[in-house]
Amino acid sequence: MKAFFARITGRVQGVGFRYYTVNEARRRGIKGWVRNTRGGDVEVWAEGGEEQLNGFAQWLAAGPAGARVEEVERRDQLPRGIFRDFGVEY
Image (tube, rainbow, N blue to C red; front, top):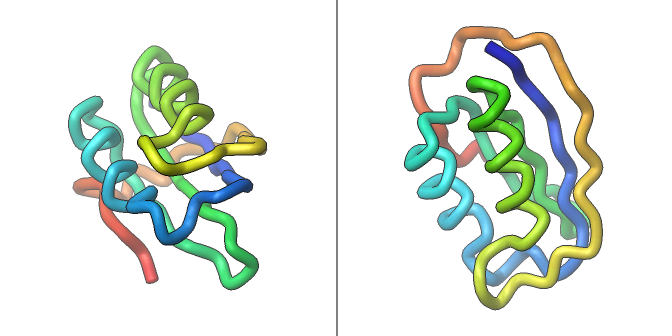
């Protein structure tokens, strides 16, 4: 199992980015969370297999329809192994 933390910048709030991210992560079997920041970005913690995470990161770089992703800053992390699912964190 691997993990990453990502900060996604651009037009990523008010376009359903969190909702679509939850659906995409669950579809791929990824555990973790997504949240909005006060500064207008979106943050993601994701845990799963290497292929799962690489595909998910590619999806984050494109985002859902209506979003305009400018940058995905991804940092590999040690998995925590405490997540049962993928959800929205507030």
